[in-house]
Image (cartoon, rainbow, N blue to C red; front, top):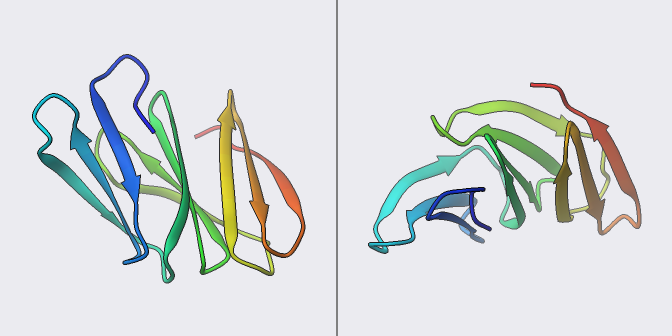
Length: 105
């Protein structure tokens, strides 16, 4: 995923981390740690990076600082997909559910 209006991108990994990269140079800028399982999904919109992982959680990150803004937990299976639109976050899980979260931070 890429940040809106930037040349940065973010990758998710089975090693439980996300890395924010400089798209122009290919250099890593930040490593985001907070999941307890492999990260399967990531979305970046504006100032928020959202990730979903095998630990059944969704984490919202501040894209500028790399700090965790909040952790969302309700799934009973690995989070396999995330999307962001406005203040809403959608997560889909291996438990065959999708959750729409209203997140204003």
